[in-house]
Amino acid sequence: MYKILKLNKISADGLAVFPLDRYEIGTEIINPDVIVIRSSNMCDMDLPEALLSVGRAGAGVNNIPVSRCSEKGIVVFNTPGANANAVKEMAIAGLFLASRDIAEGISFSQSLKGKGAEVPALVEGNKKKFAGQEIKGKTLGVIGLGKIGVMVANSAIDLGMRVIGYDPFLSVESAWGLSREVQRADGMDALISDADYISVHTPLTDKTRGMIDAKKFALMKKGVRLLNFSRGGIINNDDLRAAINNGTVWRYVTDFPDDKLLNMENVIAIPHLGASTQEAEKNCAVMVAEQIKDFIENGNIRNSVNYPDSKLAINSDFRLMIMNKNIPNMVGQISTILATANINIVEMLNKSKGDYAYNIIDVSTMPDEDTLKAMYSIKGIVKVRALRLKK
Image: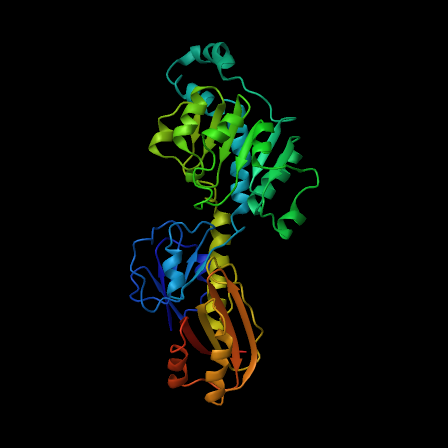
């Protein structure tokens, strides 16, 4: 029986992936094999000894101690693309909120409560205060062309915008999905200086933290509209304030509010609603549950942020999964121990990602405890698991 600890509410559709005869699921589980999470912060958490994997029902993993998990052989899964359409729709809404003074107009209308018969005249007399501009024919710059960025770019094309995109790490999959009408920017600076609207869709990393700063704002057109439905830390808020005050940024729309932003003019701060739809929550929950189940029961890895994607067809009744530091001669040492134990390798997969590697080895017989312990004598071995597979 595998034990799953929920740190957040997870869609029932996702939890239904786990058969109740093989999985125990709860919010008070002690020493779990799996943790499923959405927004809870695990960074200061003591990682349970039995923990095999952490599943994030969403894309970002800044609330998970990924480095510590890697060191302990804990696979961290996320769900890239499962909530992409929901975030895309919010970003498109952001385009309109940034263009037309919709939010301010609504607030004004609410202020007229109790004015009775005066309301129509007050509306007509004040509506010019909330005039905006149309997005058709304007230039949108999309920074980051992953699943969400591609969808935003394509939708903006459909809305009649000119779209330029920048992503130095554009994947083949994203390139196939991107409209041919999206123009490639020569670099981020070229995109920023050319765009009337800028939409940011990059992960938050040490390299992207504060990426949009005073130097970038200095390149922008006066009156630019800036959208950020990616991560709050990508924009330098102090430099943003200066850019708003000098008229460079006409409107900033984000769903990552903080105290500084809430005290700025011309900022529309939406509570973090990008992926908050019934469809997105279901998609993320089902996707992460299926990934975890395949890993727990078969040793396969898909959409891990710290270990390589690895999938091996079942070739035997017995399977070894070995995680190790990505250093030379690991496979040779593993093979030697198996040969010494008279265990034949039926099929094997070895893949690496950064500092770590992962091996799936289908073997002729189930290794005994002494053989498994011998694996840990190899310098660089992180974790060893053995499974009896169900074909």
